Image 1: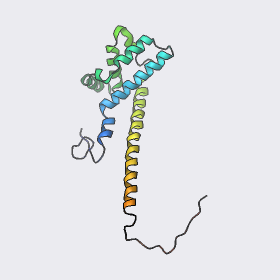
Image 2: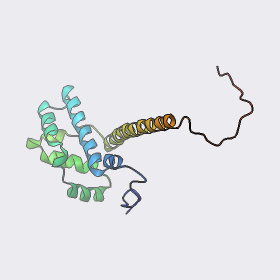
Image 3: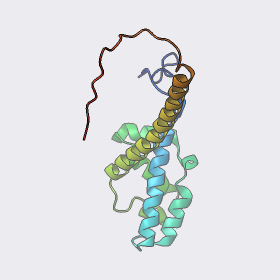
Image 4: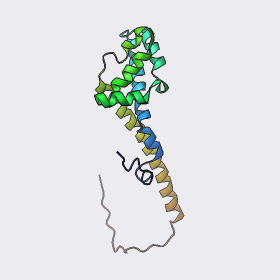
Length: 163
């Protein structure tokens, strides 16, 4: 289904390339993988999973290892992509070490965390855009500080003291 975000004509009116990339399928799966790697590292450090399993999960949980066509098919069957991602990591790991991937976690843990990670990174983009806008507005104010403009003359200005 097409939307204004997908539209060749409208997409730059309703978003930026940076923001679209951040919310792309690839970025979402990269956040899932980042989360799974962090989980494995913490669990290995706490001796919840074997260090060897952690090392194998970290080595295999890479975006370039994900088959997106297969992930699409699996997602269409179950309705969410996390399980498909985990299954692919598990299948890539040697000697059954992938069975420790996602240990004790829920799909919602990964989904919510990935969404918050994307929001965090979105706010970085928004902050940079706002900094640019504020700089542009400040420059315009400086450039036009002596430019006459039509306005209603104020007869009296009341100052309100705020405490």
